[in-house]
Length: 245
Image 1 (cartoon, rainbow, N blue to C red):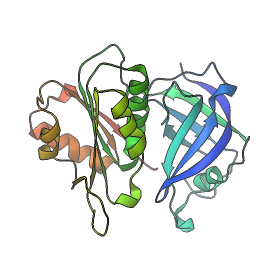
Image 2 (cartoon, helix red, strand yellow; image 1 turned 180 degrees about the vertical axis):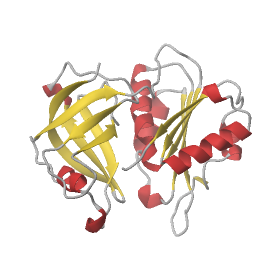
Image 3 (cartoon, helix red, strand yellow; image 1 turned 60 degrees about the vertical axis):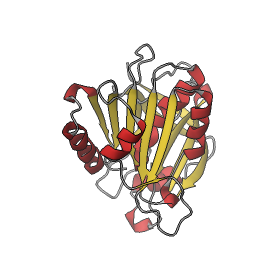
């Protein structure tokens, strides 16, 4: 059951253009547990001047096996576009205690179910899959997991090295990144958006997997429509919309 808890802030890292990771010390609340793919609510001690409120929902990006809780989120370089919440969040001090509520959500990777999964992410929608794949790699889960993730530019790309390591650690994991605007970069991988052709290139039998889609609503809606057009049954498509990040 979800419940309130606090964790102290450890550090902040910029991991890509306008994308940051925030680490919190999970050892200070060892009773807190969650499943890969779940999310929490973060509430800050602010009285916002905008209409976006003093709390946000964030996917827990780290694996449950780590001793920290990781949140990765987009924060614009343009200060006029940054909410009061994100401004405060971006300036947390080391050791500062932050109020959480969780875990929540049913966008999960059941350990005991060996049905293949095809994971489809757009941009920051990769966060639940980062949790799932780092967990699956360390636990040596036996279900086949194929991640497709699309970013607009190389500058926005995140978690490539970490997830390539997961692929090396567990032969059931495959990771495919694609860049829709690779111009003026040295990108040598797949290009374009996630498509029927790209999926069929790496997934031999589309009738077996469960398809899990996470990202901004337009990406999720477009991907679900594409999956339905190629004959994927509705009950085999799971979605997680990322709004307001």
